[in-house]
Image (spheres, rainbow, N blue to C red):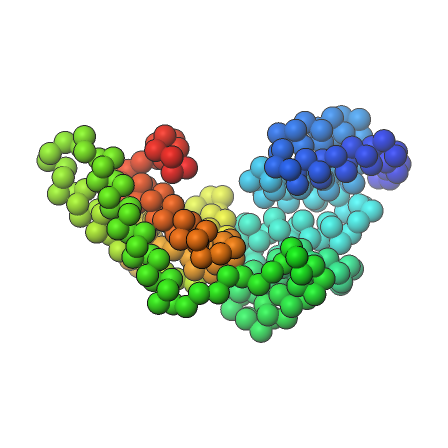
Length: 286
């Protein structure tokens, strides 16, 4: 099926959707793209931007489905890139790699695709390829794609230990109203180890449906104090896990890293103690 080219006004609306996504206005972006779809139902260039909205809504499966209808888009590199992002979020790393490589073959200076390949190759255990694409992304856009924060293992561990002390004090204050017969359980829960690993295992990410995001900063694995199953994987020790590479990529300096480590440990300790996401929002830990 062929589609007439979008009008100048319609292309302006497409640009507006991208601008809204850049500003974090996902709801407004959705409303704008839905209006475009009503005017130009099924148009591949509108489907492309709709897929981007789906990704920002945390719906990579829907984005992938949308992109199946966008293969006649005027921008094949963007199609390949968005499909790579969706597949990465769905823990389909090999397919994501192939799409991202197609994107940079079509448009070699697509820095975002090179940066995505860095993360994909880290998960595939090919650091030499990750380093190559990191250098490509920085050469294309050195402002947007700076090297990740560097910190020694002892320094990182010291931040984790400091955060554990602050977290213990935080929850001991919050849990003063816990019934006396549960004090021992709460005390034992607060002694749960915090383990630092480079990246989440694929099995951890794929244990839930939809999968957990590969850029996850931390995760509690085990059963909560109130026996609300959070994530219970055979052979994986019960612990709070911090994912070092993701944290270093996410944070711009040591102070931000210290805050993010503390917040992540607090959040996952909350899950261990039986709080759901709504509870954690109420505690300021969402």
